[in-house]
Length: 184
Ligand SMILES: CC(C)(COP(=O)(O)OP(=O)(O)OC[C@H]1O[C@@H](n2cnc3c(N)ncnc32)[C@H](O)[C@@H]1OP(=O)(O)O)[C@@H](O)C(=O)NCCC(=O)NCCS
Image 1: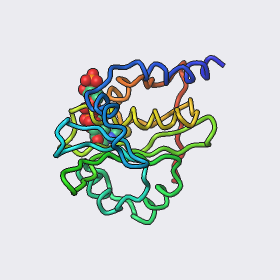
Image 2: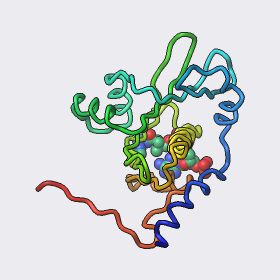
Image 3: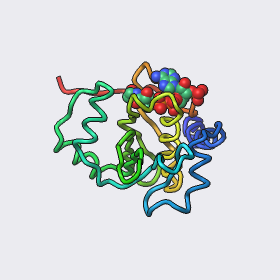
Image 4: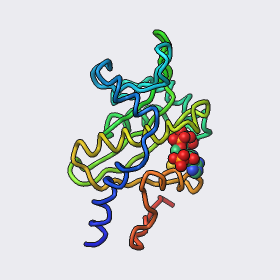
């Protein structure tokens, strides 16, 4: 029971973490965004960062983004299926004039009621270290919270545990262990 109490209190803790400049700008420009997307950015009209939940993502562009951070390639037909069957797909774009570039991605699977698990969080190396990964995660958490999902989990690579920790994620809350099964 204590375990669930801990998890249900996590998103509020996330909501109180410090706001990045990108999100402040999001609030200012939200009225200008197209349906299904939220805008944020550098404050220069020529260049903006846009967040979207649109699933219509060019799989080759997504593959390029994943290549850029050194992830192993996955069959595109399976990536397509995973996107189609995800509960939430979040993407982050750099907009320059009428050109847009995919610079970040994350998705979540869910039981649509209590639980969601976040997968494939990635920010292009050219855009890392500017608070955008955190903005992307806050965007995902905001969307999940708006669907009344309160128990959010993810599997962190060892080198990014502290990245997630800054947003209120806890490893092994109350001793709970993630367990894995792989085919032999
Ligand atoms: C992990 C990743 C998404 C972070 O994106 P980012 O845009 O560089 O992160 P941010 O600039 O928003 O950083 C947010 C905070 O996390 C910290 N942080 C970022 N990357 C970190 C890392 N690898 N380890 C520890 N802390 C990290 C930052 O210092 C910052 O802390 P602050 O809020 O105290 O200033 C990005 O580095 C990435 O795509 N990595 C490759 C793919 C990957 O490993 N994904 C995770 C799979 S589980």
